[in-house]
Length: 119
Image 1 (tube, rainbow, N blue to C red):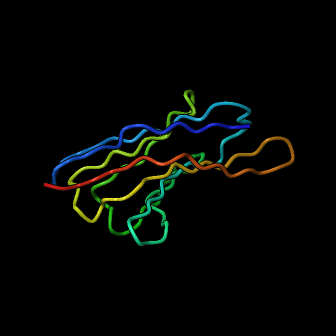
Image 2: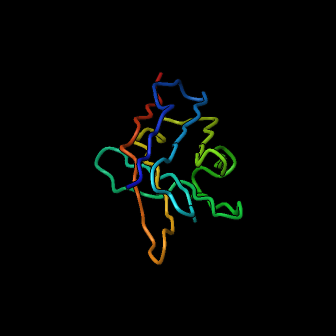
């Protein structure tokens, strides 16, 4: 089994910054992609940013230029640096990891961390 532990959420004023972390542990195998999703109140969960095994990145348009996703392969950890935060960024942020173990592919989710942007 694989465990994902997220940290770094909290309350921040508009224009502020937060850094989310998600560390994977357990029977990891080979991590393919790592990403962040978010779900605001009354909304569906949607992708924020994804980083591939080679370091390629993709972002939802609304966070481009403000958020940066990165990963530390040695620590099996993915980060999301969030700058210039806006109230509409308020959501529960979920870490997502896709990996290969043996002949199978697996997809795991973190427990979620609350990010609130408010004055």
